[in-house]
Length: 164
Image (tube, rainbow, N blue to C red; front, side, top):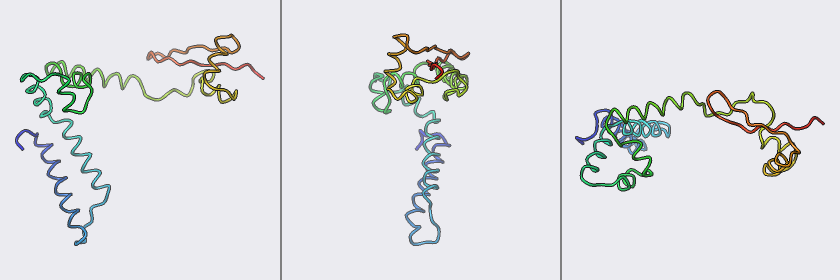
């Protein structure tokens, strides 16, 4: 296995040893738990994801005439995901990946809980109607709604119900 990094080869060997131990566990006192198996699999996946062998194989394939569609098919990715991950030189790839990590740090994935008013789905539940009905009432001027923009650029439609 000369094309794998030492880390990926080590993770593969550990998983194979765990598999062999699991096959023997019925006859011995040592038992491989499902969590041990999961940890071994995830360790191997992480090592393979970080392994430069994938990038080297992609570059060799493209140099030999493979298209990005071919690369994507072999990697189980979409064409755009394959190009995003592997096109360009090492510096361009590193810059793209760092920009992606920065966006993820700067833009949390959770919806803030301290926004004014109600979300469209919350307003629909309170009114006993569908979200589409809430939008129709907003368009007709029967309900007040505003778009709230956060400093990071995310926007949320907020509905303000009349006080009963």
